[in-house]
Length: 227
Image (cartoon, rainbow, N blue to C red; front, top):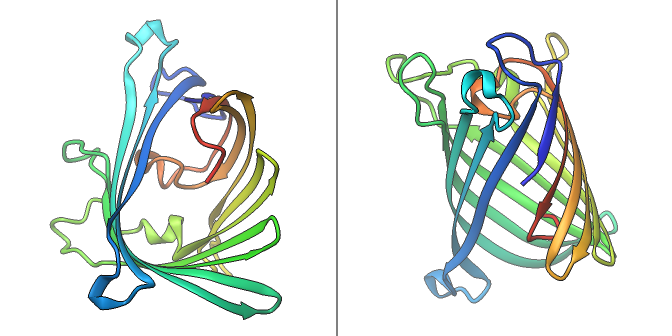
């Protein structure tokens, strides 16, 4: 639950300091899918709420909530590539929306393949995706690919119970290039309780603002040690 300073957000009477609440889980639903011992089926869900907790002027509303259910096939692997060890390949379907009425509604559906590599304490996750097309009448955000791109790349380094991570997205266009960068540091506090510091710059931190560039700085607590 981070307390975030949203640097540079203006207008709409919003407070630049808000709270973010996130609930996320993944569950292995089936093992040995189709008789393959190394192929499992997982389901997951994430909800992220952005709360104007300190904004008494507009009665401290929730500014936005994003919902993200997901289903994936996880193929456990063990191969070498350029000095890295390939540990898994995920094939997934993910939906993301904000559940709001027309005009403020945002949603999209993607299929993806995610490749997981590791070397010592370093992990690399590469995830290209393809947005499933929608009809013009149903599409709330037809240009979302122009801002969130066609995949992401994540680097993680673990040092004991501390985790450092970097997430990068980019449209990979020579003209009108857009993307995002997220840097995080997770560290132990007490028992299973962990703290973290996170910096984000770019597009797509929340669906409602997917086409607005933002810079945010957050500090918070969590029950996980990073991704």
